[in-house]
Every structure is written in C-alpha cells, then in structure tokens.
Length: 317
Image (cartoon, rainbow, N blue to C red; front, side, top):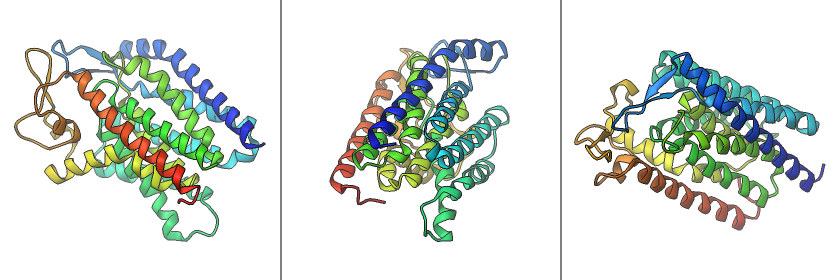
C-alpha cells in the first residue's frame, strides 16, 4: 500500500471513529445518568449534574476504527493490535480510577504496566533502557493529559490540537505508519467535543483523559516523533510542573477547586497549588474564555511542532 492509499485509509478510519463516537454518545449519556454515574459541574453557579465517564464513547470509536485499520492494512497488524491493547488497558485503568479513585502511585504503576506491550513494536536495534523508557513515557503522558482538566472541553480540545499537530507532522515527514492511530483518536475526540464543549453534557472522566496521553506517547515512539510529541504536550507539561513545584505530589481529593463568583466567573483561590489555569486567572474570567486561552496556547505549541517537523526533513527521533 503506497503513502496515498495509506493516508486515505487513515482518513477513513478517522471517519469511522467520528461516526461511532458521535452516534453512541446520546445513548451513553442517557445510560450514565440513569446509572447515576454523574458529577457536579462545580464551575457553574447552579452546579448541574453531568454524566461522567463519557470517555467510554471515545474508547469505543477508537477501538472500532483500529480494528477496521487492521483489516484494511494487514501489514500494520502488529503495531495496530498492540496499540489497541495499550489503549484498552489504559481505558480500563481510567474506569477503575473513576469508580474507586486510585492513588497517584497506584495509577502511575498501573499505567506503566499498561504501556509494556509497546516494547514489542519498538524500532529495531534499540537497547533495553530505551524499551523500558517507553512504558514510563506512556504513564507520564497519560497523567499529564489527565491533570490539565476540569473545565468544559479543555482536555478534549487540547487532545484534538495535539493530535492534529502530530498528524500533520507525521504526514510532512512521510511517517505514515502511525497515521491510522492518530486519525482514529482524532476522529473520536472531535465527535466527543460536540457533547463536551461548553456547556458540557458529559465529562470524559479519567477513561477519556488518560487514553489521550497514552495515544500521543504511542505515536511518539512508534512513529519516531518524540520531540514533536514533547512540544505539543508542553501546555500539559507546564501545568504539571507548576502543580508539582507549588504543592508537590497531591491526591486530587486534597485539591482546592477553582471558585466561582456571584456572576458565574472563575476565580483562582487565594491559597493552594498553582497551575496553568490559575496562572491565567489573574482576574475573574468566564469558563469558556479560560478554555479558549488554553486552546490558543496549545495551538501555538502545535504550530511549533509542525514547523519543527517541516524543517527537520524527517531527520528527527
């Protein structure tokens, strides 16, 4: 299969992921609410209850698209199957975390285990240290996309921006072997954003946020675009560093949430940890405006990643 055919196949898989996720979400939202799997939207004055764990829809759309990719591109069967296994394991860990709230240590260890299968599809002639770094990267990237969260559409939008940048970068550098993966996750996330954007009808939950970072890490190592992946994840990395520097390792139940004033605007607490969101909240702002600013930051780094890919001429690891 030549590059044009593979690109068309990847786009088709992305379309499949979009349609599956878009069509399943209304029913999934209704079923989650009926099962009382809901969370309060604490950044609204009325504190409405919103369906949680909506990332199951992303996971379903992605999984079906990857299976279609395996059928259409049997030459990529090994890496697509391994990718699906890692994403499914990461999604299951996210579901468990949503239901019983794992500790930070438990989550890191479990995500490291989930990333181990990627070692079987690493580039040839790499050392054991390199192979062991891969599941570590999956664990870290998953946690980073899980940490910069909490506002309507912020995680989904940043995921779309990062994966769009990675997809363009891989096309520019003729790294079509990961195009099916990036297009599939991108299609599922775009569909999910229709329901997760402000005002959100559903939250992704950890099942949705963790698989975004895992997918980026997988593309980084299989597609050999680690530098690009690092660049597009910089908003999440900056947020993680701000939180760690200001508060160290904290469990989420100890976080003091961003407050809402009488006009429904977000206000950063006078004390507590720092973050990218709270760094933006120098004055009260509407939730949607904060999300758009974060997205713009993501777009800037995404464009930088694409430019690096263009000028690197494929000579990048």
